[in-house]
Amino acid sequence: MLAYIIRRLVYLIPVLFVLTVVVFTFVQMLPGDIIDVMMGEEDIEDPEVRAALEEEFGLNDPIYVQYGKWIGRVLQGDLGKSLITRRDVTLELFERIPATAYLAITGMILSMCIAIPLGTLAALKRNTYVDNAVQISALAGISIPEFWFAIMAVLLFSLHLGWLPSSGYTSPLENLQESLIYLILPAIAIGFRQAAYTTRLTRSSMLDEMNKEYVDTARSLGFRERKVVYKYTLRNAMIPTLTISGLQLADLLGGTVVLEAIFAWPGVGRVIYEAIIQRDYPMIQSGVLVLGVFVVLTNLVVDVAYRFLNPRVELN
Image (tube, rainbow, N blue to C red; front, side, top):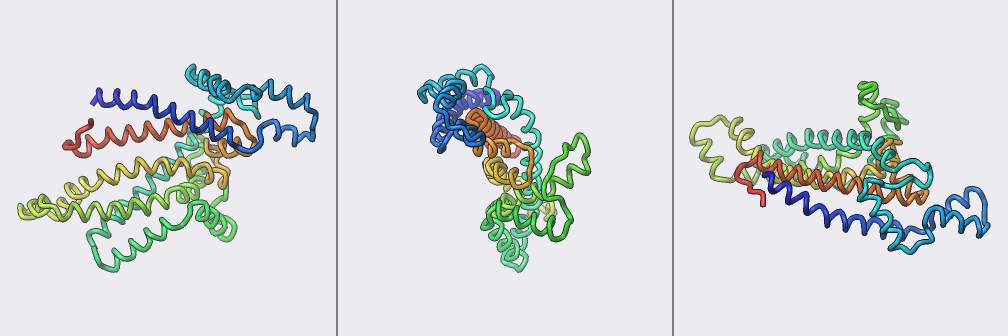
């Protein structure tokens, strides 16, 4: 187990290197730059001012030199300074990570709590109206874009009904009740689509497991149906569900960029969104890199969790 974890951590090096190259390249392809944003706001067109700002921010260096300087600082644990706030990017990101983790983890837990019971129920009630209703609901959930669902949820529950706030954030460490109130809409918006995918996968996995010989053997030995379903069948069916859930975390984190902007959620996604608008290159590059590291490490945790769910799974 330890050797596998070390090997996977070593594999992270080329993965993260490719990630840094891709992120840096795409950021450089963005139209305009921070100088255009700053000079446009102050209505300045002096070429000397532009040249001085480019020199200050290092934008007059060749692209490969800019990348080399950035990756050199990253390897030393220095993500640079924001071109807008002039604060350390590391400090700004780590201030926002708890909010993003709070939202993403809650959305994932919410989706699993909804999807696993529904998928299991659909499998046990196969080809009945219950199964049909669950499948139709799951298909609808997959088809609806997250940003559209978020906007509709705000319009319905905030503007029309007035039940929930449309935006805002309070740390659970400061006021748990108020924090949960602000969390409800964003968590539902970010988790409903994953719940739809996981529901369909759980149903399919349960049906596959229920048709295997060990289930018939357990029943013939006189085991209670509840024990057969929940101790044996569901446990084995959770292996592919866990796999997809780990991969879906990437979608959750990607969705935070838009959803955090909609709900004014002070997380990493909102920082990246604002940095893109303002062409704050160090913040964009470092923000995406941090999210990428989080996704890769989460997939490692998921792989290791296989071994505990099913001892027959070998980690190679």
